[in-house]
Image (tube, rainbow over all chains, first blue to last red; front, side, top):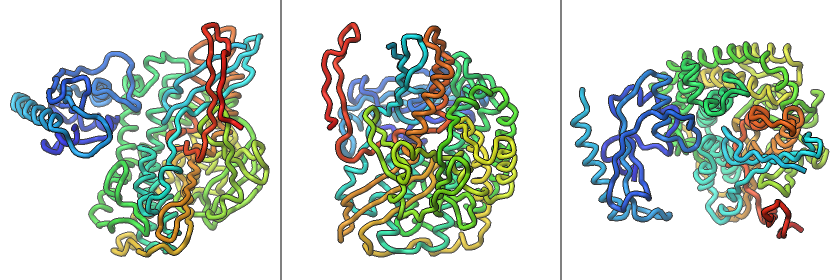
Length: 122
Length: 473
């Protein structure tokens, strides 16, 4: 779902969050992370403001956006505004294509991002 | 007998567990290194067309997919019985240099530097890449930049940073444009500067680790690595050289003959097989692979700056460097070599030739492809039917070769640093750190064919063994 949304918005689709992304985040005014989440009702989205992590949760195989933001701040001195938009999927089994619920969540996520982008100061 | 378990082993690729058995006196009696995952690629690729194998086996790993694609493509080249165009060989090796640089950068900066620069006994909450960035932002920035450079080389030459599509049977998917070549050459000086200053920094801090140098897998073993016709370090092509612990030559083997020299033993407490040098049998035929082993096996690197560093390395530690702590040093020398070699390759005019792929049908019933992955020799061996469907596949993956050595290193470190009467976190961190020195890729290395040995123990609340079930015969 994340890559599909990123493709609509011409954003960055990655397998996982890696330290190399910190350099790109450092050059941004705002960052929006997009990911599927089985804890969000199918077809819905949940938006959460993300702050750089305080504790020592490191970047290894399952980097969190908060850890990446902290790395960006420590290495580049930059702290872009950041949000996580979690998209509720319906079916997480191996398969092909997106469900109607998945597409609905993507559509809502894209609309939310466009709304927020309009509000990011220049 | 008391038991200490380190699970998971942190800051490595893949999943592992270490069990330390203490005697009644609290001292370490023995240790076990368990790799707790099985991948099974050797089995589920049976029936697939051989030309799918580079794409399939690339998915074994997200850190070293290029290595798998190269070894797999070379095995496919042999099945097709083709000699790939010279430009394709240059491009494959250039992609491989990018792969080595990004992988070595990940290992040093993100996985091991927290121990080396913050201290083995430092606060574990901060002993990670974030803690490193907080205390040494410049070094963290260098690590990000160097890894990014390697990934960008892969992306530009092979299509994508991870699981690239441009390495194919018969060669590469597309020729190189001069503009792309020039873009990489323009960025090379900065990458080389990072590699040099990182090695300089490491040489300065080395004397702070006398106990680690003396106990992190300091032991006599054989060493194996690819070498060229003049005995120089080779990563993409060459013959497999086995050198004894005392530096004498044991064997030099054409890759298709590997099975005459490398056997594989299944072990009962891990999904990772244990390769060994066949003429000496198991487990006497223990050998190491990877950066330290490659520098021990080769006569020289073959590029100017790397050879100067190698000379200093050998003057300091001897011709055959036998402590696994020095994998870190060797890794940084290799990063310099790869950057120099990348420049040589890109400055070869014929790398721009438009002929980059040979095409053919199945012309041989089996093929073997061997490259040096960042962590050591990587072997892909396939057998196909007349239609090219995989009948049998054997993958001996870099980290697997080091299984015996890692196990013995864990035991040596445990005995040196873990004192059961008083356990301290730094002691256990050192046990994990010796595993990290090998930069293992455990997800890559477990492809047990057939039945994986499995024992299930039912343990009561008091730790007593109630029952056990095993498929071992």
